[in-house]
Image 1 (cartoon, rainbow, N blue to C red):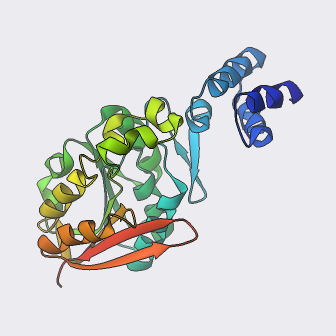
Image 2 (cartoon, rainbow, N blue to C red):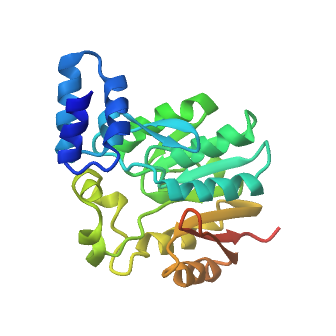
Length: 255
């Protein structure tokens, strides 16, 4: 264990001892452990190496080429659960590995009808695993084009963690994200809000009366995200968490 910790520290891993324990637990044998340590020391995200990420107290399956759920996004889950009900229809749009939908369904209970959609087939392979315990269904395609018509006008909670980093700021992201997560899960266009505007403009026909769209944004961008939701006919409010450094725009369809 000592040599593993030293290797990880030399590679710049701040929490080397904790990571060494996780890598050791994930290894099938000594040779496998050597490979895992080499991958982590080479800069791969720890979650990709061990095959899971902790999110809202759950283990979400992830792997190479997949966006790793961020802790700040747990705030969106918290707000969604507070607004939800046990028989809610929940849609995790731009779902990635499906962590948002799975976490909300886990807390709301077995009567939830869960759907997850994304354009990335590789991410959806993990999403299928993560939403399966909650009876979730996965749809592949570009935003609302992925969805079955049976969802129109029925979605109570529309959860969105779409990319919102401006193209010109991608280079400022940590190397783990830049080098190992798909650009489509990071790049939000020139001002970071291209996908937000598309999500907002198409949301109304899918939301149930009184349904909510919860979308993660940044404090700096939140006024423009809110404007996009308002322009789409939704009543909008902002929510934020200093603890998690998280900001949401929440749009509600009139009841």
